[in-house]
Image 1 (tube, rainbow, N blue to C red):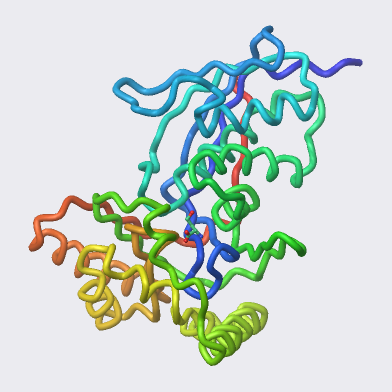
Image 2 (tube, helix red, strand yellow; image 1 turned 90 degrees about the vertical axis):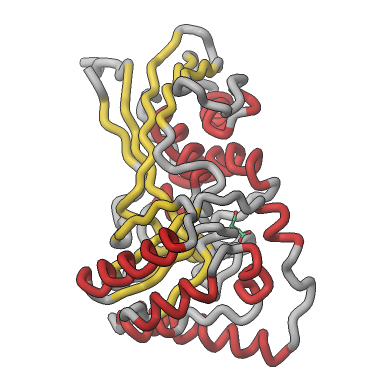
Length: 312
Ligand code: HSE
């Protein structure tokens, strides 16, 4: 008996917070919201990707220049697929927000395309193809957004070792996205090229405490360990009202927080929804007083990761 071929799917991939202060280019977590949604439809044109963008979208229309398009093309080529895909993109995570918009597009595209294949490829292959897409945006192949968007949860990844999914602390996270543009390339250009040995050892100690706290279920201690010793301090001037945000969030009950990825979003970790709502309210007031357009999200850690559902 042959299984009926899937013709069309809808995929979801979550927004992510990269770095988490202690794990520059290494550590990231997936959020329960916002999420990116993407539809994929089988085409008879072999290994071709066609894109349908939202009205007014400024994203590249040519598949090999578009993050989602490139990721899907990579998967079709690497699996020698005998079909092509039409991808319909719905951007819920604003590009340049610092919460993994490009990673979510790349991951949604590979997960949607994979669901049309006769056999599910390995997660390693999906990760690799998503990185082919993400690389278009960031010029680098770090996994700190792509891996948590694909796998869900809290993921530690580096080029020379294993992908490690850490036990997930029970946090409620407030994300503030001031609607300004911070270019990742600029945010990377302000980073120090060397750090003092003492800073390096302190940072390693906080990372060790963080991992230990995740494994022992010490949610508050895990949040407390997120000390930003050299990346955040170099970038804070790029984030509007970052100091004030920090003071407000910590005074209203956040345990810690920092810059999400390369900004401009910031994240603030709370232990209860009530604290998170107070922090969100305080941050919104600050943004309103400064007349700065912004968005906020209250989110848990998303342990599901990206997924696709066949459509009829
Ligand atoms: N780890 C990256 C950075 C995330 O902070 O520059 C943005 O792609």
